[in-house]
Image (cartoon, rainbow, N blue to C red; front, side, top):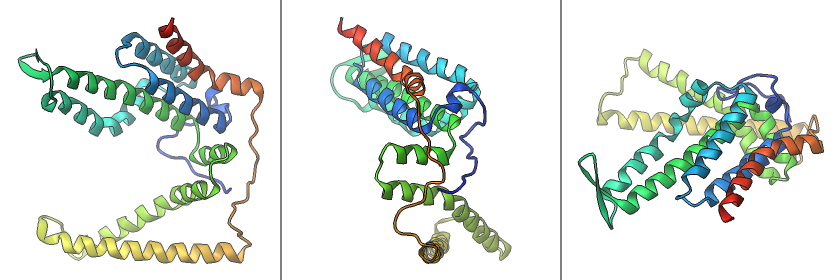
Length: 252
């Protein structure tokens, strides 16, 4: 698998978390997410403990809170949806700040916000401490289907190329006096999107033929095997292990 490039979500560093093999971090985040989802929504203190665990990981990885907060904007649609649920929800009603809200809707909103936020923060920490190329290599080590890994790899590799192609097309339109102002300009944008799709498809065909001419047989060569020691697995699984311990305490 060829060399990658830094992504905006990645924060270079040499912390203990950065040095962990990617397959360990992938499995740890997945296990942590499963534990969070399995936690009853009424367990407020458990979600607080999960947040403390993530804060500890962020501190060890030297990822500042502002870095995480800026990238949590991706969660905004879920937050808006969660705030809407109590308003349109059915069932028992209660008054909060002069608004009549659904009690089941409030519980559902809390459930979405708490679990989604913890999952997003865990994913941000994974992306901040692991290069995109390494994430794909970790997925390959975890025996994720090779086809899915290759699709993700090509998406990562050529996303910047496609975005740059879109930028050039936009500049070409604007240099000819075009500016999208109302619904009448949608056909022009649609034709541009069609042209971009055709160019991307043709580029994919050329890349595939070039790969076949270089001996591609459906599998990407692995330049470097990334192995993990028992100690590294233990460190990585400390996060879901701590979350599982919190969940276990609830059953006592």
